[in-house]
Amino acid sequence: MAERMLKFVSVAQEQPDKRPAGARRRDFNEIYAEFVPAKAETQASRCSQCGVPFCSVHCPLGNNIPDWLMMTAAGRMEEAYELSSATNTFPEICGRICPQDRLCEGNCVIEEGFESVTIGAVERYITDTAFDNGWVRPVKPMVERDESVAIIGAGPGGLAAAVQLREQGYQVHVYDRYDRVGGLLMYGIPGFKLEKDIVLRRHRLLVESGVQFHLGKGIGDTDGADSIAFSTLRARHDGVLIATGVYKSRDIGGPGAGLGGIVRALDYLTASNRVSLGDTVAEYDSGELNAAGKSVVVIGGGDTAMDCVRTAIRQGAKSVKCLYRRDRANMPGSVREVKNAEEEGVEFVWLAAPQAFEGEGGVTGVRATRMKLGLPDASGRQSVEPVEGSAFTLEADMVVKALGFDPEPLPMLWGQPELEVSRWGTLMVDRKTFMTSLPGVFAAGDIVRGASLVVWAIRDGRDAAAQMHAWLEELTAAQAEVAE
Image (cartoon, rainbow, N blue to C red):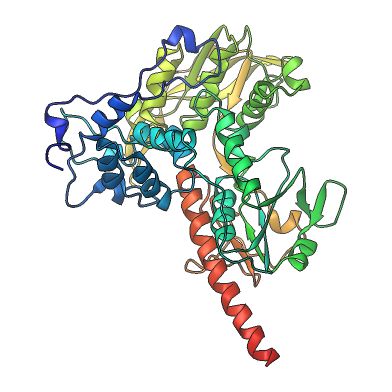
């Protein structure tokens, strides 16, 4: 090991080659090239194999990162894949979209100046190599079980649970209101971060594994042509997992907030992704959800805001500005994403908050106020305060609101008043069992924890599946005792 590892003192950190900004502005392809094998092995060899791996500690999935880095450095790629996939259902997706600078790489113990190990790119390389070599195979359970489970939501949490439950032999049915699998992986995250073939590849594998998908099928309070009542679903299956995510966009008020040209981030990103997939989108064709030739202002500072500004650049916007009320150091979005956006021509307007929207019929400008950082609030984050007399106006004929997401009112929509929710509208669950207030109904992912990262949804989906399996085992045993 000593000969192959700990090379951070002599080998500099490198990411895979990144396409020039001018070229990537013209399409929605991923911006990073694949590692060549020798480069992946060299970068993996920089790992210090420390006794307490903080990269693993700060990974929501607890990935065995030092172990699969060591296997990669030794060229033992199939073993690296087995280790990587043992704790992560979709490592090729996490390797692409996880904010590694805030998680594993950001907590690497290699001192500043030597720079952290390139974990995310190696993780992506491992699984892409596994797919290329046919090492990724459909799930084949040892024993088929009679019990069926319903999973509501085909996003990362629901799909992760589907894999785990299928491995146990359950008949798994996934219901989703969209016409494609993936949730925000498909319609929320742009192709330059996650090309859609990557998600579709997983869909095909799940179908081969025996998971049954019911797409274009929403959940409601009554049965319909394109929906199924929650009560019907519950009666049809032995267990139910709610993994819907959170889709209700947070809004912003103020004078002019109802003007035309002010759109929600999810509507904007969904339209763009659908067009990239070959769909016809009327709102895009009309220009309502198309930034071509426009002065665009995106309000927000998270990863969704970064997706919006970079999408607008690719659609041919005249100018793109990101308005954020705090400074760069306090921005919740990935540092890498901010850098990529700046390279592509996005202008960041730090410490500024919108006050009103100008225009008649359609928006023509955003009136904003300069902000300053104040004392920390209850969460420890610095508060923001307006600077008196600092108002200014940004030209805008398209404004995208990227302010985050809240849960939809599921108890009301599904006619299930007994389904308990928190004061934030998220579903209440037993933290150990993931069961909601309804017996046999479990929940996981953003609908429980609030808007969060894909990697947390995968973790929650895996954990919820384990608890569902334990509950169904107990239920089957109890029913067998009664039958005797």
